[in-house]
Image (cartoon, rainbow, N blue to C red; front, side, top):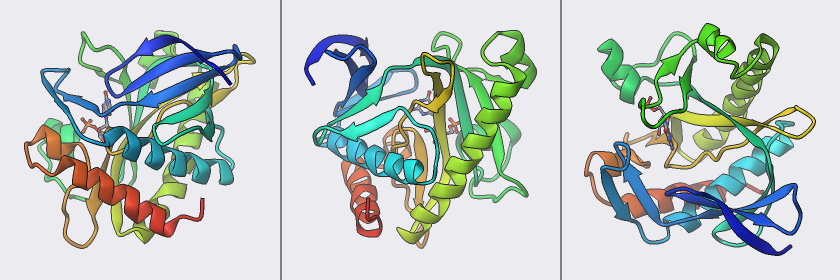
Length: 239
Ligand code: 5GP
């Protein structure tokens, strides 16, 4: 496999074409931003931790029968994936109330809701990724009713697989964001990484935040938090 031109120049990931037109190389960087790029920093080895965490999670999902874009890990900071058409919609799962949901509804962070919450957001940086509902998603042509049903079912499965994996690592999977993409035949796959950049991981015993909130809130020790997630997951996973 040969690395070709860059096709997506993101902050925390850069995507390169390869000599195989249906495959891309995803490279994880050490860069981190928050608040729509107002806050920026470089965290040593963040790319290595995020790539390894993402790869372990994808292997768990594949074993659980979840369709994903991930093919294989290529290096400490790179993974080979299937090229997809990404749907500009974020799917957020909340097992514990935190972040924007706590703010929006005036709820205490840490509250466990009576049922798992699924949010949809329209992916648009200019608009601040506004929250939408199924009617918006269908009306905007983001996904059909049938596709949304599949997206919710697959997202629930992702959560059902990952909650116990993180639990065994002493980590509460508070919330996470994923995105879906379409393969050339139209089938849907999870086309986004779950890492401390895109999820909230709390140490189950102490409540210590092991994710990007440390950077958002200037708590320090961001790299150490990412490293902790990586090492704990590695300890409990055979994948
Ligand atoms: P919140 O709605 O509280 O801001 O985010 C809920 C969860 O989704 C958090 O784990 C957060 O990191 C993730 N998330 C929400 N929007 C984005 C986004 O635009 N990019 C990334 N990487 N994660 C997001």
